Image 1 (cartoon, one colour):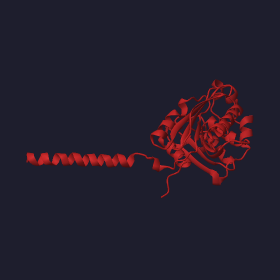
Image 2 (cartoon, rainbow, N blue to C red):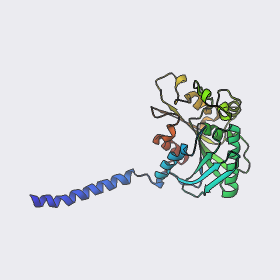
Image 3 (cartoon, helix red, strand yellow):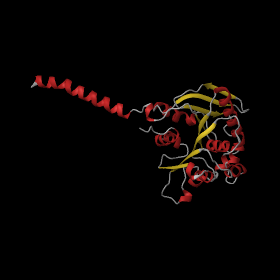
Image 4 (tube, rainbow, N blue to C red):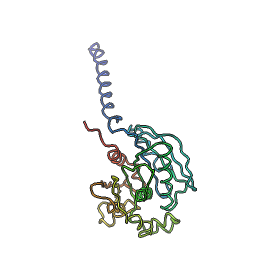
Length: 277
């Protein structure tokens, strides 16, 4: 009996090892899961955002082999660029960081123009995707409404919890002030100027969060931006160019959205799409 058990033990271990190998091989993401291109994706943080705002999302995208962090672009308060890295294939990810994270929308748009012109002239970038969280989504959308000669073509835009109709949270503007805060007020001149335009040639994905889905529509929000405000971009985009997603649950807060794996997947599906066999 002891001899039989000793004979079975290596077989059991071998079977377990094969099972574990098959499990991890099936569950581990690979580059073949998505198309890989040379088109960079720029990630733009929101009001009072920092390099940390998108850092964990970029880490996850890279860890899943969906893209590669290849460049960081820091913009000084004077609009000067400090660029580290280069771009190649493998779905390059570019992290954009504004030193003045409370600047007006008009300033942020100027900085995006400077970045784009530099990518075109110094790095030969022809096409880009843009991902913007909160005010970063407004800045990216505003950039699209400008004339952009000698700059890369924007193929796709993702706006994540961006308040196109402004922020209506009570007391918010008692503790937040300055140029950017003024632009984020409902019916501000900056938002009126932005939303009167139409986006015609860029595919757009709008992602919003709702932490109170059982409440009436007008009260649904992510703790800062109301759903109706986040969906304001839909008035600017043709239906054939628009995709819209709403994430519900306790974790779908304004700052929590860019920490959710479900949001990673939505963005990756939209930007790079699964391979078609």
